[in-house]
Every structure is written in structure tokens, then in C-alpha cells.
Figure (cartoon, rainbow, N blue to C red):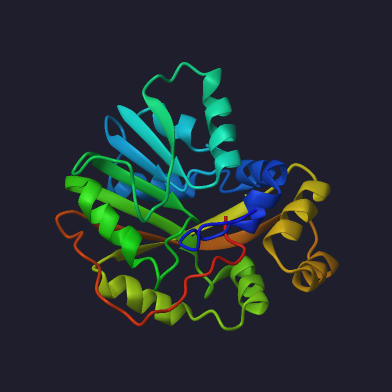
Length: 253
């Protein structure tokens, strides 16, 4: 399949959407990420954009409180899965649009809360998407980006081992230059069975790393630290120019 060069391929969910569904169910069972978001900006009664919505797992959660939700996803099979998820639900104010972060089919100043969870915004290279956020966010709106914290937790150790060239300090400097703030969140993976855990590890890590993890780590879960990056407009502005780093998605959700 030919993929637009501007689209960041997500091999985990693109290639194994069923296993990724298992992963979604096992991520953050206590809702620590949602709680951290709510302390910054609540999505109740808000116009929400779920950017990189994948198969739409979070759309019903957001739609339960938001006045409207737009899910945007670049991969057509996932767009279809997300629409099928909504088909049997009474959520007429929730919709899915095919599109990319760099060119959103969303009106200017029409979004109060942006939710991007392990999608596109991984540091240098995402400036075109940040420019689009600046366009679509309403005054006083808040954008959230959730991504891995490679400096903490057992999962962070695994991540750093798998991608030793990943530079968390460079990522932090990038977001600070853009005017974003960070909230650190401690959550966990927890799956119903060991088989589920093994399947998820297999789609999130290279085979050699996955084999080492499964040989040494017992149980069905792991502690996991993430960064919740956030900014509130009108602080959102045209992104600061950086070196032309290529933004390649690794294993992230």
C-alpha cells in the first residue's frame, strides 16, 4: 500500500488493529491520564477534536461528556473501524473524518479541546500539525498530547533499550520552545491474561526487545510513565522553526 510521505505510519495499530484493541483496554485502568487532563481543562460541554483517533476507541469516552467530537484519522481501514464502532451507539454528535494532522478539515477557531494520544506529535517534525492546531483551536481552548516518558518507569527502560537514539531531553526542549507545559503521569498497563500481555508487547517492540522483555518480566502488566503535554490558546502560535528532523513513529500507540 502506498502511503503519503507526510503521514506517519503507525505499524502497531495499522498492522494489528485487533491486538491494539486489546492494548487500549489494558492502558491506564485507573484513568490517571484522563484525571490529569481534567485538572488542566475538562472536556465536558466542549467541542473536542480527537486527532489520530485510530479505530475510535476514545470517541465514545469523549462523546459521553462533550457537546461535539470530531475524530480525525489518516488510515482508511481505521476510519472505517471507527465509524463502525459508532454505528451502534447513540452519539449523533460524534463523527469521524479521514484526514491528517497537517491538513485538518476542521473550521478555524472551532475546537475547545484537542486530544492526541500517541499520534503524530512526537517532537521535531510535527510543526505543520502544530500550525493546524493554532488555526482550529478556539480562544481559551486547550490541546493535549500524550506520549511516552522514556526517563522513568519499567516501560520507559524498555523503550530506551529498544530505541537508544531517542533523546528525551531534545523532545522536552522542543515542546518548551513551542510554549507547551508538561504534566508527568504515572499509570500502568494491565491485561486480563499473560497471552494478551505478550501479544501487545509483540506489536509495540522490535522482536529482539520483545523477546528479552517476555523472558525476564513476569505477570500481565507493567508500570508505565507518560508525559502529558498541554497548551492553552492564545498561547498556541505558529510553531518555532527547528532543524528539519524527520519524525518517524516507533512503537507508540
